[in-house]
Length: 350
Length: 273
Image (cartoon, rainbow over all chains, first blue to last red; front, side, top):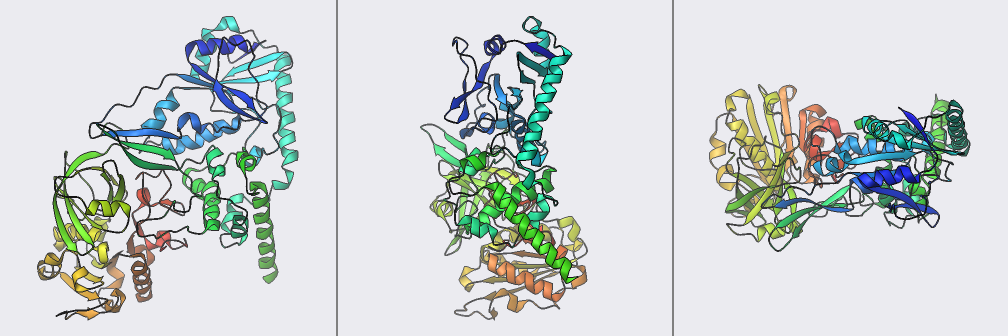
Protein backbone atom coordinates (compact mmCIF):
# COMPACT_ATOMS: atom_id res chain seq x y z
CA UNK A 1 0.00 0.00 0.00
CA UNK A 2 1.92 3.08 -1.21
CA UNK A 3 -0.86 5.50 -2.17
CA UNK A 4 -4.33 5.58 -0.69
CA UNK A 5 -7.37 7.84 -0.78
CA UNK A 6 -9.12 9.69 2.02
CA UNK A 7 -12.22 11.83 1.69
CA UNK A 8 -11.58 13.99 4.76
CA UNK A 9 -8.48 14.94 6.73
CA UNK A 10 -10.01 14.86 10.19
CA UNK A 11 -10.24 11.11 10.81
CA UNK A 12 -6.69 10.72 9.49
CA UNK A 13 -5.28 13.50 11.68
CA UNK A 14 -7.33 12.39 14.70
CA UNK A 15 -5.76 8.94 14.43
CA UNK A 16 -2.25 10.40 14.34
CA UNK A 17 -3.04 12.75 17.22
CA UNK A 18 -4.23 9.73 19.19
CA UNK A 19 -0.74 8.31 18.98
CA UNK A 20 1.50 11.34 19.30
CA UNK A 21 1.60 15.12 19.51
CA UNK A 22 0.62 16.55 16.17
CA UNK A 23 1.44 20.02 14.89
CA UNK A 24 -0.59 21.54 12.07
CA UNK A 25 -0.48 24.83 10.20
CA UNK A 26 -2.81 27.60 11.30
CA UNK A 27 -3.45 30.80 9.42
CA UNK A 28 -1.92 33.86 11.08
CA UNK A 29 -2.45 36.98 9.05
CA UNK A 30 -1.32 36.19 5.56
CA UNK A 31 1.00 33.40 6.72
CA UNK A 32 0.76 30.05 8.44
CA UNK A 33 2.31 29.10 11.74
CA UNK A 34 2.30 25.72 13.48
CA UNK A 35 0.17 24.95 16.46
CA UNK A 36 -0.74 21.80 18.34
CA UNK A 37 -3.65 19.91 16.83
CA UNK A 38 -6.70 19.54 18.99
CA UNK A 39 -8.84 16.53 17.93
CA UNK A 40 -11.79 17.74 20.01
CA UNK A 41 -12.11 20.84 17.89
CA UNK A 42 -14.73 20.56 15.17
CA UNK A 43 -12.82 22.89 12.93
CA UNK A 44 -11.10 21.25 10.04
CA UNK A 45 -7.39 21.73 9.57
CA UNK A 46 -6.28 24.34 7.09
CA UNK A 47 -4.46 22.90 4.15
CA UNK A 48 -1.60 25.36 3.78
CA UNK A 49 -1.14 26.30 0.15
CA UNK A 50 2.59 26.97 0.58
CA UNK A 51 5.17 26.48 3.35
CA UNK A 52 4.40 27.92 6.77
CA UNK A 53 6.13 31.04 8.02
CA UNK A 54 7.88 29.11 10.79
CA UNK A 55 10.92 27.19 9.59
CA UNK A 56 10.96 23.46 10.29
CA UNK A 57 14.20 23.85 12.27
CA UNK A 58 12.03 25.01 15.19
CA UNK A 59 11.06 21.38 15.72
CA UNK A 60 14.61 20.07 15.60
CA UNK A 61 16.71 22.90 16.98
CA UNK A 62 14.75 24.79 19.63
CA UNK A 63 15.53 28.49 19.93
CA UNK A 64 17.17 27.75 23.28
CA UNK A 65 17.81 24.47 25.04
CA UNK A 66 19.94 22.90 27.76
CA UNK A 67 22.92 21.28 26.05
CA UNK A 68 24.66 19.82 29.10
CA UNK A 69 24.42 19.81 32.86
CA UNK A 70 27.54 19.61 35.02
CA UNK A 71 29.52 18.91 37.17
CA UNK A 72 27.20 15.89 37.40
CA UNK A 73 25.96 14.94 33.95
CA UNK A 74 22.24 14.39 33.60
CA UNK A 75 20.70 12.30 30.85
CA UNK A 76 18.76 14.61 28.56
CA UNK A 77 14.97 14.48 28.76
CA UNK A 78 13.30 11.88 26.57
CA UNK A 79 11.60 13.28 23.50
CA UNK A 80 8.16 11.85 22.78
CA UNK A 81 7.00 10.91 19.31
CA UNK A 82 5.59 13.89 17.44
CA UNK A 83 4.25 14.57 13.98
CA UNK A 84 4.22 17.66 11.83
CA UNK A 85 1.59 17.98 9.13
CA UNK A 86 1.84 20.41 6.24
CA UNK A 87 5.56 20.47 5.59
CA UNK A 88 6.44 21.25 2.01
CA UNK A 89 9.14 19.95 -0.25
CA UNK A 90 11.39 22.91 0.62
CA UNK A 91 11.01 22.00 4.30
CA UNK A 92 12.08 18.43 3.60
CA UNK A 93 15.16 19.63 1.78
CA UNK A 94 16.01 21.92 4.66
CA UNK A 95 15.89 18.89 6.96
CA UNK A 96 18.25 17.14 4.55
CA UNK A 97 20.63 20.09 4.91
CA UNK A 98 20.38 20.17 8.71
CA UNK A 99 21.04 16.41 8.73
CA UNK A 100 24.31 16.98 6.89
CA UNK A 101 25.48 19.18 9.75
CA UNK A 102 23.94 17.65 12.87
CA UNK A 103 23.62 13.98 11.93
CA UNK A 104 27.09 13.54 10.41
CA UNK A 105 28.76 10.47 11.80
CA UNK A 106 31.69 12.27 13.36
CA UNK A 107 30.27 14.65 15.98
CA UNK A 108 26.64 13.55 15.79
CA UNK A 109 24.56 16.00 17.81
CA UNK A 110 22.44 13.93 20.16
CA UNK A 111 20.21 16.90 20.99
CA UNK A 112 19.23 17.13 17.34
CA UNK A 113 19.11 13.38 16.76
CA UNK A 114 16.72 12.62 19.60
CA UNK A 115 14.15 14.96 18.04
CA UNK A 116 14.88 13.97 14.48
CA UNK A 117 14.33 10.30 15.24
CA UNK A 118 11.02 10.95 16.98
CA UNK A 119 9.57 13.14 14.24
CA UNK A 120 6.91 11.84 11.86
CA UNK A 121 7.06 13.96 8.73
CA UNK A 122 3.75 14.46 6.96
CA UNK A 123 4.32 16.66 3.95
CA UNK A 124 1.70 18.10 1.65
CA UNK A 125 1.71 19.20 -1.98
CA UNK A 126 1.82 22.94 -2.60
CA UNK A 127 -1.45 24.17 -4.08
CA UNK A 128 0.04 27.33 -5.48
CA UNK A 129 3.42 28.92 -6.14
CA UNK A 130 3.86 31.53 -3.43
CA UNK A 131 4.85 35.06 -4.41
CA UNK A 132 8.35 34.60 -3.00
CA UNK A 133 8.84 30.89 -3.78
CA UNK A 134 11.98 30.25 -5.81
CA UNK A 135 12.51 26.57 -4.96
CA UNK A 136 12.66 25.54 -8.61
CA UNK A 137 16.00 27.38 -8.95
CA UNK A 138 17.51 24.89 -6.51
CA UNK A 139 16.00 21.72 -7.88
CA UNK A 140 12.92 22.06 -5.71
CA UNK A 141 9.37 21.21 -6.60
CA UNK A 142 5.90 21.96 -5.32
CA UNK A 143 5.56 18.38 -4.11
CA UNK A 144 7.69 16.04 -2.03
CA UNK A 145 10.20 13.89 -3.81
CA UNK A 146 11.85 12.23 -0.82
CA UNK A 147 12.48 12.68 2.87
CA UNK A 148 8.85 12.29 4.05
CA UNK A 149 7.06 9.58 6.00
CA UNK A 150 3.66 10.42 4.57
CA UNK A 151 2.68 12.90 1.88
CA UNK A 152 -0.80 14.29 1.37
CA UNK A 153 -1.93 15.74 -1.94
CA UNK A 154 -5.22 17.61 -2.14
CA UNK A 155 -7.44 16.78 -5.08
CA UNK A 156 -10.92 17.99 -5.94
CA UNK A 157 -12.88 15.44 -3.91
CA UNK A 158 -10.42 14.40 -1.24
CA UNK A 159 -6.78 13.63 -0.61
CA UNK A 160 -4.18 11.15 -1.75
CA UNK A 161 -1.90 9.91 0.99
CA UNK A 162 1.40 8.38 -0.03
CA UNK A 163 4.02 6.68 2.12
CA UNK A 164 7.68 7.59 1.65
CA UNK A 165 9.35 5.55 4.38
CA UNK A 166 8.95 2.38 6.38
CA UNK A 167 7.39 4.41 9.19
CA UNK A 168 4.84 5.79 6.74
CA UNK A 169 4.13 2.45 5.15
CA UNK A 170 3.59 0.84 8.54
CA UNK A 171 1.11 3.56 9.38
CA UNK A 172 -0.88 3.00 6.20
CA UNK A 173 -0.88 -0.76 6.69
CA UNK A 174 -1.77 -0.45 10.33
CA UNK A 175 -4.82 1.74 9.69
CA UNK A 176 -6.28 0.23 6.56
CA UNK A 177 -9.79 1.08 7.81
CA UNK A 178 -9.10 4.79 7.21
CA UNK A 179 -8.09 4.45 3.60
CA UNK A 180 -9.57 3.50 0.25
CA UNK A 181 -7.83 2.59 -2.96
CA UNK A 182 -6.93 5.41 -5.29
CA UNK A 183 -8.52 5.26 -8.73
CA UNK A 184 -6.00 5.90 -11.47
CA UNK A 185 -7.90 9.00 -12.59
CA UNK A 186 -7.24 10.67 -9.23
CA UNK A 187 -3.52 9.99 -9.47
CA UNK A 188 -3.63 11.62 -12.89
CA UNK A 189 -5.43 14.61 -11.37
CA UNK A 190 -2.72 14.90 -8.75
CA UNK A 191 -0.01 14.78 -11.40
CA UNK A 192 -1.77 17.48 -13.41
CA UNK A 193 -1.91 19.70 -10.32
CA UNK A 194 1.77 19.12 -9.70
CA UNK A 195 2.72 19.98 -13.25
CA UNK A 196 0.62 23.15 -13.08
CA UNK A 197 2.42 24.37 -9.93
CA UNK A 198 5.79 23.55 -11.43
CA UNK A 199 4.97 25.53 -14.54
CA UNK A 200 3.81 28.43 -12.41
CA UNK A 201 7.10 28.39 -10.49
CA UNK A 202 9.08 28.33 -13.70
CA UNK A 203 7.10 31.23 -15.13
CA UNK A 204 7.38 33.31 -11.94
CA UNK A 205 11.12 32.81 -11.74
CA UNK A 206 12.07 32.79 -15.39
CA UNK A 207 14.26 35.87 -14.97
CA UNK A 208 16.26 34.13 -12.28
CA UNK A 209 17.35 31.19 -14.39
CA UNK A 210 20.88 32.32 -15.12
CA UNK A 211 23.22 30.71 -17.60
CA UNK A 212 25.96 30.48 -14.97
CA UNK A 213 25.61 28.56 -11.68
CA UNK A 214 25.05 30.86 -8.69
CA UNK A 215 28.22 29.50 -7.08
CA UNK A 216 30.32 30.75 -9.96
CA UNK A 217 28.54 34.09 -10.07
CA UNK A 218 29.25 34.67 -6.39
CA UNK A 219 32.84 33.48 -6.51
CA UNK A 220 33.56 35.84 -9.34
CA UNK A 221 31.93 38.70 -7.49
CA UNK A 222 33.87 38.34 -4.25
CA UNK A 223 35.20 41.88 -4.61
CA UNK A 224 31.93 43.34 -5.84
CA UNK A 225 30.57 46.47 -4.20
CA UNK A 226 27.06 45.05 -4.39
CA UNK A 227 27.31 43.64 -0.85
CA UNK A 228 28.20 47.00 0.65
CA UNK A 229 25.50 48.70 -1.38
CA UNK A 230 22.91 46.17 -0.17
CA UNK A 231 24.14 46.66 3.39
CA UNK A 232 22.99 50.28 3.25
CA UNK A 233 19.39 49.09 3.37
CA UNK A 234 19.96 46.41 6.02
CA UNK A 235 18.66 47.28 9.48
CA UNK A 236 20.49 44.31 11.06
CA UNK A 237 17.30 42.80 12.44
CA UNK A 238 18.64 39.28 11.73
CA UNK A 239 15.16 38.17 10.62
CA UNK A 240 16.63 36.58 7.48
CA UNK A 241 18.67 34.14 9.56
CA UNK A 242 15.86 33.46 12.04
CA UNK A 243 13.27 32.45 9.45
CA UNK A 244 15.77 30.70 7.20
CA UNK A 245 15.14 26.95 7.53
CA UNK A 246 18.78 26.10 6.84
CA UNK A 247 20.61 28.76 8.89
CA UNK A 248 21.75 26.84 11.93
CA UNK A 249 24.35 28.97 13.73
CA UNK A 250 24.15 28.74 17.47
CA UNK A 251 25.67 30.28 20.51
CA UNK A 252 26.78 28.39 23.62
CA UNK A 253 26.53 30.12 26.96
CA UNK A 254 26.81 29.02 30.56
CA UNK A 255 24.12 29.31 33.17
CA UNK A 256 24.43 29.09 36.92
CA UNK A 257 21.62 27.32 38.77
CA UNK A 258 21.18 26.66 42.49
CA UNK A 259 22.97 23.33 42.56
CA UNK A 260 24.28 22.77 39.09
CA UNK A 261 25.67 24.52 36.03
CA UNK A 262 24.28 24.24 32.55
CA UNK A 263 25.56 24.79 29.07
CA UNK A 264 22.85 26.40 26.98
CA UNK A 265 22.58 26.32 23.22
CA UNK A 266 20.75 29.19 21.56
CA UNK A 267 20.13 30.34 17.99
CA UNK A 268 22.65 32.88 16.79
CA UNK A 269 22.99 34.95 13.65
CA UNK A 270 26.05 35.56 11.49
CA UNK A 271 24.60 39.00 10.81
CA UNK A 272 25.42 40.08 14.35
CA UNK A 273 28.37 42.53 14.51
CA UNK A 274 30.35 40.66 17.15
CA UNK A 275 29.48 37.21 15.78
CA UNK A 276 33.03 36.34 14.73
CA UNK A 277 34.89 38.68 17.09
CA UNK A 278 37.57 37.25 19.37
CA UNK A 279 38.93 38.41 22.72
CA UNK A 280 40.95 41.53 22.21
CA UNK A 281 38.56 42.81 19.56
CA UNK A 282 39.82 41.35 16.28
CA UNK A 283 36.87 40.69 14.00
CA UNK A 284 37.16 39.32 10.46
CA UNK A 285 33.72 40.62 9.50
CA UNK A 286 33.35 43.99 11.19
CA UNK A 287 31.74 45.46 8.11
CA UNK A 288 28.07 44.64 7.50
CA UNK A 289 28.58 44.15 3.76
CA UNK A 290 31.18 41.48 4.56
CA UNK A 291 28.70 39.68 6.77
CA UNK A 292 26.03 39.75 4.07
CA UNK A 293 28.59 38.43 1.61
CA UNK A 294 29.73 35.69 4.00
CA UNK A 295 26.14 34.55 4.49
CA UNK A 296 25.56 34.25 0.77
CA UNK A 297 28.95 32.63 0.18
CA UNK A 298 28.18 30.12 2.93
CA UNK A 299 24.83 29.29 1.36
CA UNK A 300 25.84 29.06 -2.27
CA UNK A 301 29.59 28.32 -2.25
CA UNK A 302 31.07 26.99 1.00
CA UNK A 303 28.29 24.61 1.98
CA UNK A 304 28.10 23.29 -1.56
CA UNK A 305 31.85 22.62 -1.56
CA UNK A 306 31.66 20.88 1.77
CA UNK A 307 28.45 18.88 1.59
CA UNK A 308 27.61 18.75 -2.10
CA UNK A 309 24.36 20.70 -1.83
CA UNK A 310 23.48 24.36 -1.60
CA UNK A 311 22.38 25.68 1.77
CA UNK A 312 19.33 27.37 0.29
CA UNK A 313 16.08 25.68 -0.61
CA UNK A 314 14.47 28.70 -2.24
CA UNK A 315 11.61 28.88 0.26
CA UNK A 316 11.60 32.68 0.05
CA UNK A 317 11.08 33.18 3.79
CA UNK A 318 13.98 35.67 3.92
CA UNK A 319 12.27 37.67 1.18
CA UNK A 320 9.01 37.78 3.16
CA UNK A 321 10.77 38.66 6.41
CA UNK A 322 13.10 41.25 4.96
CA UNK A 323 12.53 44.60 6.65
CA UNK A 324 15.33 46.53 4.99
CA UNK A 325 14.30 45.97 1.40
CA UNK A 326 16.99 43.40 0.52
CA UNK A 327 15.43 40.84 -1.79
CA UNK A 328 17.53 37.75 -2.42
CA UNK A 329 16.16 37.61 -5.96
CA UNK A 330 17.31 41.16 -6.70
CA UNK A 331 20.71 40.56 -5.15
CA UNK A 332 21.23 37.47 -7.29
CA UNK A 333 20.07 39.36 -10.39
CA UNK A 334 22.46 42.23 -9.70
CA UNK A 335 25.33 39.83 -9.11
CA UNK A 336 24.53 38.06 -12.35
CA UNK A 337 24.44 41.34 -14.30
CA UNK A 338 27.83 42.27 -12.87
CA UNK A 339 29.18 38.82 -13.67
CA UNK A 340 27.91 39.00 -17.25
CA UNK A 341 29.39 42.43 -17.84
CA UNK A 342 32.75 41.37 -16.39
CA UNK A 343 32.62 38.33 -18.62
CA UNK A 344 31.99 40.45 -21.69
CA UNK A 345 34.89 42.72 -20.83
CA UNK A 346 37.21 39.74 -20.44
CA UNK A 347 36.08 38.29 -23.75
CA UNK A 348 36.47 41.68 -25.48
CA UNK A 349 39.98 42.04 -24.04
CA UNK A 350 40.93 38.73 -25.60
CA UNK B 1 31.49 11.69 28.01
CA UNK B 2 27.94 10.45 27.84
CA UNK B 3 27.83 10.77 24.07
CA UNK B 4 26.84 14.40 24.51
CA UNK B 5 29.12 16.68 22.50
CA UNK B 6 28.51 19.59 24.85
CA UNK B 7 29.39 17.79 28.11
CA UNK B 8 32.61 19.05 29.70
CA UNK B 9 35.03 16.87 31.64
CA UNK B 10 35.33 18.18 35.19
CA UNK B 11 38.69 19.44 36.34
CA UNK B 12 40.41 21.58 38.92
CA UNK B 13 43.08 24.25 38.74
CA UNK B 14 45.92 22.88 40.88
CA UNK B 15 48.61 25.44 40.14
CA UNK B 16 48.89 28.91 38.67
CA UNK B 17 52.13 30.26 37.20
CA UNK B 18 52.61 33.99 36.54
CA UNK B 19 54.37 34.05 33.19
CA UNK B 20 54.34 37.79 32.45
CA UNK B 21 52.41 40.85 33.60
CA UNK B 22 49.42 39.82 31.45
CA UNK B 23 49.88 36.07 31.03
CA UNK B 24 49.33 33.18 33.43
CA UNK B 25 49.62 29.43 33.04
CA UNK B 26 46.99 27.26 34.68
CA UNK B 27 47.79 23.67 35.55
CA UNK B 28 44.56 21.70 35.42
CA UNK B 29 43.91 18.23 36.73
CA UNK B 30 41.03 16.63 34.86
CA UNK B 31 38.89 13.99 36.59
CA UNK B 32 39.80 11.54 33.87
CA UNK B 33 42.88 11.24 31.67
CA UNK B 34 42.76 13.84 28.95
CA UNK B 35 44.43 13.00 25.66
CA UNK B 36 45.17 15.46 22.91
CA UNK B 37 47.55 15.90 20.00
CA UNK B 38 49.88 18.87 20.04
CA UNK B 39 48.22 21.86 18.37
CA UNK B 40 44.67 20.72 19.05
CA UNK B 41 42.58 23.01 21.26
CA UNK B 42 40.10 22.67 24.09
CA UNK B 43 37.13 24.68 25.33
CA UNK B 44 37.84 25.67 28.91
CA UNK B 45 34.76 26.34 31.02
CA UNK B 46 34.61 28.54 34.05
CA UNK B 47 31.37 27.14 35.49
CA UNK B 48 28.47 29.54 35.29
CA UNK B 49 30.50 32.11 33.39
CA UNK B 50 31.28 30.67 29.98
CA UNK B 51 33.92 28.92 27.98
CA UNK B 52 36.70 29.92 25.62
CA UNK B 53 39.09 28.09 23.28
CA UNK B 54 42.74 27.53 24.20
CA UNK B 55 45.50 25.31 22.89
CA UNK B 56 47.18 23.45 25.76
CA UNK B 57 50.81 24.38 26.27
CA UNK B 58 51.79 21.11 27.93
CA UNK B 59 53.12 17.94 26.37
CA UNK B 60 50.49 15.57 25.02
CA UNK B 61 52.42 12.78 26.75
CA UNK B 62 51.12 14.15 30.05
CA UNK B 63 47.43 13.21 30.28
CA UNK B 64 46.88 13.61 34.01
CA UNK B 65 47.64 17.33 34.15
CA UNK B 66 47.25 19.75 31.31
CA UNK B 67 48.55 23.28 31.18
CA UNK B 68 46.83 26.19 29.54
CA UNK B 69 48.54 29.54 29.14
CA UNK B 70 46.16 32.47 29.01
CA UNK B 71 46.63 36.15 28.20
CA UNK B 72 44.18 38.59 29.75
CA UNK B 73 42.44 39.86 26.65
CA UNK B 74 38.66 39.81 27.14
CA UNK B 75 35.86 39.00 29.58
CA UNK B 76 36.50 35.25 29.99
CA UNK B 77 40.27 35.57 30.22
CA UNK B 78 39.97 38.35 32.80
CA UNK B 79 37.71 36.11 34.91
CA UNK B 80 40.15 33.22 34.55
CA UNK B 81 42.98 35.48 35.70
CA UNK B 82 41.05 36.11 38.92
CA UNK B 83 40.86 32.37 39.67
CA UNK B 84 42.82 30.81 42.48
CA UNK B 85 44.08 27.29 43.13
CA UNK B 86 41.25 24.84 43.71
CA UNK B 87 38.90 26.49 41.20
CA UNK B 88 36.70 23.92 39.47
CA UNK B 89 36.67 24.08 35.70
CA UNK B 90 35.34 22.08 32.76
CA UNK B 91 37.13 20.99 29.62
CA UNK B 92 35.59 19.99 26.30
CA UNK B 93 37.65 18.56 23.52
CA UNK B 94 40.23 18.13 22.23
CA UNK B 95 39.17 19.57 18.90
CA UNK B 96 40.59 20.04 15.45
CA UNK B 97 43.81 19.07 13.78
CA UNK B 98 47.09 19.54 15.52
CA UNK B 99 50.57 19.85 14.02
CA UNK B 100 51.40 16.98 11.65
CA UNK B 101 54.54 16.10 13.61
CA UNK B 102 55.14 12.82 11.76
CA UNK B 103 55.39 14.70 8.47
CA UNK B 104 58.14 16.87 10.02
CA UNK B 105 60.52 13.91 10.37
CA UNK B 106 63.90 14.47 8.70
CA UNK B 107 63.30 18.19 8.24
CA UNK B 108 64.45 21.49 9.68
CA UNK B 109 61.57 22.79 11.80
CA UNK B 110 61.47 26.56 11.64
CA UNK B 111 59.30 27.96 14.43
CA UNK B 112 58.37 31.62 14.49
CA UNK B 113 56.42 32.79 17.49
CA UNK B 114 55.38 35.87 19.39
CA UNK B 115 53.71 36.80 22.65
CA UNK B 116 51.20 34.28 23.95
CA UNK B 117 51.59 32.44 20.64
CA UNK B 118 54.38 30.59 22.39
CA UNK B 119 51.71 28.57 24.26
CA UNK B 120 50.86 26.12 21.46
CA UNK B 121 54.52 26.27 20.44
CA UNK B 122 55.62 25.06 23.88
CA UNK B 123 53.45 21.97 23.50
CA UNK B 124 54.91 21.41 20.05
CA UNK B 125 58.48 21.91 21.30
CA UNK B 126 58.00 19.42 24.15
CA UNK B 127 56.71 16.95 21.56
CA UNK B 128 59.65 17.60 19.23
CA UNK B 129 62.19 17.44 22.08
CA UNK B 130 60.87 14.03 23.10
CA UNK B 131 62.07 12.67 19.76
CA UNK B 132 64.60 15.34 18.76
CA UNK B 133 66.77 12.91 16.77
CA UNK B 134 63.93 12.48 14.28
CA UNK B 135 64.40 16.03 13.04
CA UNK B 136 67.34 17.68 11.33
CA UNK B 137 67.05 20.76 13.50
CA UNK B 138 64.59 22.84 15.47
CA UNK B 139 65.15 26.53 14.79
CA UNK B 140 63.17 28.96 16.96
CA UNK B 141 62.74 32.69 16.38
CA UNK B 142 60.63 34.23 19.11
CA UNK B 143 59.58 37.79 19.89
CA UNK B 144 57.96 39.63 22.75
CA UNK B 145 57.25 43.26 23.60
CA UNK B 146 59.86 43.45 26.36
CA UNK B 147 62.15 40.83 27.92
CA UNK B 148 59.71 40.55 30.81
CA UNK B 149 56.87 39.74 28.41
CA UNK B 150 58.44 36.44 27.33
CA UNK B 151 56.59 33.49 28.76
CA UNK B 152 58.24 30.22 29.89
CA UNK B 153 61.35 32.28 30.78
CA UNK B 154 62.82 29.50 32.91
CA UNK B 155 62.90 27.11 29.94
CA UNK B 156 63.40 29.62 27.18
CA UNK B 157 66.37 31.53 28.61
CA UNK B 158 68.15 28.39 29.80
CA UNK B 159 67.52 24.67 29.35
CA UNK B 160 65.88 24.76 25.90
CA UNK B 161 68.84 26.66 24.45
CA UNK B 162 71.17 23.84 25.50
CA UNK B 163 69.35 21.02 23.75
CA UNK B 164 71.39 19.62 20.89
CA UNK B 165 69.84 20.33 17.52
CA UNK B 166 67.94 23.31 18.87
CA UNK B 167 68.77 26.88 17.87
CA UNK B 168 66.88 29.67 19.60
CA UNK B 169 67.08 33.40 18.89
CA UNK B 170 64.99 35.99 20.68
CA UNK B 171 64.00 39.56 19.99
CA UNK B 172 62.03 42.25 21.80
CA UNK B 173 60.24 45.36 20.58
CA UNK B 174 61.68 47.35 23.47
CA UNK B 175 64.81 46.36 25.39
CA UNK B 176 65.52 47.10 29.01
CA UNK B 177 68.20 46.35 31.62
CA UNK B 178 70.76 43.83 30.49
CA UNK B 179 69.02 42.59 27.31
CA UNK B 180 71.80 41.57 24.94
CA UNK B 181 69.85 40.00 22.10
CA UNK B 182 68.10 41.63 19.18
CA UNK B 183 65.70 44.55 19.34
CA UNK B 184 63.03 44.69 16.65
CA UNK B 185 60.03 42.77 15.43
CA UNK B 186 60.46 39.04 14.91
CA UNK B 187 60.86 39.32 11.15
CA UNK B 188 64.16 41.18 11.75
CA UNK B 189 65.77 37.98 13.05
CA UNK B 190 64.60 35.75 10.20
CA UNK B 191 67.17 34.99 7.51
CA UNK B 192 67.02 32.59 4.56
CA UNK B 193 70.11 30.85 5.97
CA UNK B 194 68.34 29.77 9.17
CA UNK B 195 67.14 26.53 7.61
CA UNK B 196 67.37 24.53 4.41
CA UNK B 197 64.19 25.94 2.91
CA UNK B 198 63.60 23.09 0.48
CA UNK B 199 63.54 20.59 3.33
CA UNK B 200 61.77 22.52 6.06
CA UNK B 201 58.47 22.95 7.76
CA UNK B 202 57.72 26.39 9.16
CA UNK B 203 55.38 26.91 12.10
CA UNK B 204 54.02 30.37 12.80
CA UNK B 205 51.99 31.31 15.86
CA UNK B 206 51.42 34.67 17.48
CA UNK B 207 49.44 37.88 17.16
CA UNK B 208 47.74 38.16 13.74
CA UNK B 209 49.90 41.07 12.58
CA UNK B 210 53.06 39.13 13.44
CA UNK B 211 51.75 36.01 11.70
CA UNK B 212 50.97 38.02 8.59
CA UNK B 213 54.40 39.58 8.24
CA UNK B 214 56.28 36.45 9.27
CA UNK B 215 54.36 34.45 6.66
CA UNK B 216 55.07 37.04 3.96
CA UNK B 217 58.74 36.95 4.91
CA UNK B 218 58.86 33.16 4.69
CA UNK B 219 57.20 33.28 1.26
CA UNK B 220 59.79 35.85 0.21
CA UNK B 221 62.53 33.43 1.33
CA UNK B 222 61.04 30.84 -1.00
CA UNK B 223 58.96 28.78 1.39
CA UNK B 224 56.08 27.02 -0.30
CA UNK B 225 52.61 27.79 1.10
CA UNK B 226 52.10 24.11 1.93
CA UNK B 227 55.19 24.10 4.17
CA UNK B 228 54.01 26.99 6.34
CA UNK B 229 51.78 25.90 9.25
CA UNK B 230 49.64 28.57 10.84
CA UNK B 231 47.80 28.18 14.11
CA UNK B 232 44.69 30.29 13.58
CA UNK B 233 42.83 32.12 16.26
CA UNK B 234 39.16 32.61 15.46
CA UNK B 235 36.01 32.57 17.55
CA UNK B 236 35.84 28.79 17.99
CA UNK B 237 32.82 27.95 20.04
CA UNK B 238 31.23 24.53 19.54
CA UNK B 239 34.49 22.86 18.50
CA UNK B 240 33.03 20.55 15.89
CA UNK B 241 32.09 22.55 12.82
CA UNK B 242 28.47 23.34 13.52
CA UNK B 243 27.93 26.66 15.27
CA UNK B 244 29.61 28.69 12.53
CA UNK B 245 31.48 31.35 14.50
CA UNK B 246 35.00 30.43 13.44
CA UNK B 247 34.49 30.11 9.70
CA UNK B 248 37.22 31.25 7.33
CA UNK B 249 35.76 30.74 3.89
CA UNK B 250 34.63 27.14 3.68
CA UNK B 251 36.75 26.05 6.63
CA UNK B 252 35.69 25.66 10.19
CA UNK B 253 38.82 26.62 12.12
CA UNK B 254 37.67 24.41 14.99
CA UNK B 255 37.33 21.28 12.89
CA UNK B 256 39.58 21.77 9.86
CA UNK B 257 42.21 23.67 11.88
CA UNK B 258 43.25 25.34 14.07
CA UNK B 259 46.48 24.40 12.29
CA UNK B 260 46.31 25.17 8.57
CA UNK B 261 48.90 25.44 5.89
CA UNK B 262 49.11 28.87 4.32
CA UNK B 263 48.27 27.19 1.03
CA UNK B 264 44.83 26.23 2.37
CA UNK B 265 44.01 29.80 3.37
CA UNK B 266 45.84 32.00 0.88
CA UNK B 267 42.72 32.73 -1.19
CA UNK B 268 40.72 34.10 1.71
CA UNK B 269 40.87 37.80 2.42
CA UNK B 270 40.07 37.90 6.10
CA UNK B 271 42.53 35.45 7.62
CA UNK B 272 44.65 38.03 9.46
CA UNK B 273 41.76 40.13 10.84
